[in-house]
Length: 93
Image 1 (cartoon, helix red, strand yellow):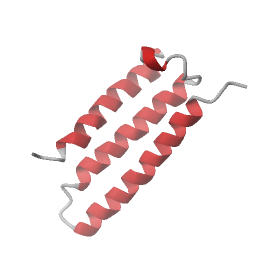
Image 2 (spheres, one colour):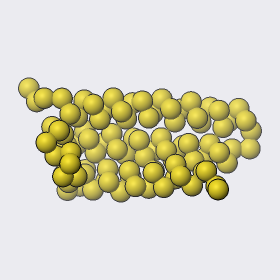
Image 3 (cartoon, one colour):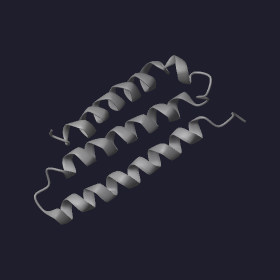
Image 4 (cartoon, helix red, strand yellow):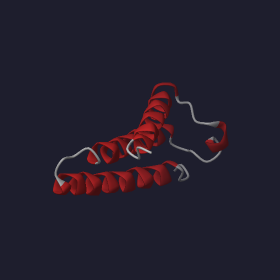
């Protein structure tokens, strides 16, 4: 199985969902009671989509060092997206 397609599919799914959240304010029904800051939630999804895209592209890098660098950047951006997801669920002031 081509394992580079899995992060690419996650990237596409999160990019579509994040864009829909940013444009329309749509949040899935199972998360509506948790998400307090909808725009921040949408940006977090877009950042995580970019992270998964970097993971997918990193597998095609010819040099092992370039693939490792892309993997580190993808991991850090995934962490940033997760932090934004958590912040979007904090209570409003």
